[in-house]
Length: 264
Image 1 (tube, rainbow, N blue to C red):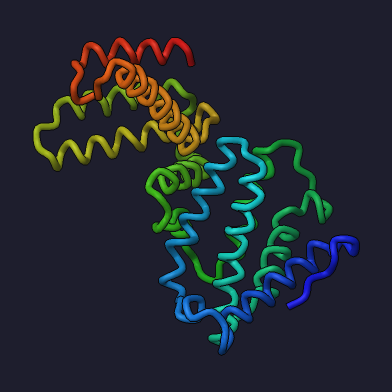
Image 2 (tube, rainbow, N blue to C red; image 1 turned 45 degrees about the horizontal axis):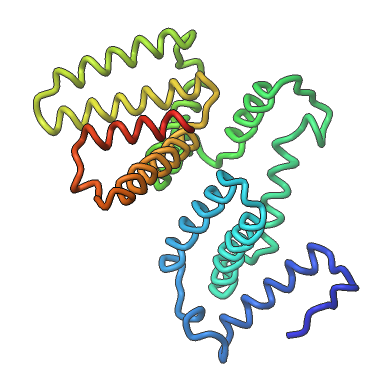
């Protein structure tokens, strides 16, 4: 396969067509044995992996890495669409049409005669339009996917319920609920009860994040990054003394942890 020279500066559309052609060749007879053996189910884990790698690059503000990771994520869409085309379901052009039409349909304040003054107005109208697109009546939460990570699912569930008016009037109510769930967890005596109450506590924390306009996934990922950095400091300081964390006391590690915390 030949590619246009850099002097020709091919458009994004032409480059996308090139990617589609590459995927078709990989899946065709005489192509790559590994690519030809893949199925929708075997590729799914890569889709999730690439999604998290995109998120990680964004968190690190690594734009060179993000450029490559977005390409990897785009490959997953092309891969799935190629398999769907081979099975006679649809092709990648149909997917592009579907999202283009959806964006136009759900932005009447941009492509139509309606107006939207605030971000809240846009979200409300988006939900109303989306509800009319369903082919059969559904509950408000039925459209929330169950296969997403639990933290994301709880965020979507609570947001959908809040849009219908089922919500606390202000953040004080969420904080009261948080304390209520904490007390119930303290009273739990079995593993099943503790699992139940920890789940309720986590769900309430997601709502607290929503009221605070904080993405809980990002908040947790950044907390993870801080823990990695601070624990790494503890390990390095101990290594300088010829020891490992397992060879040190909790008090020693806590002192080094506070040292790391004060510098970040």
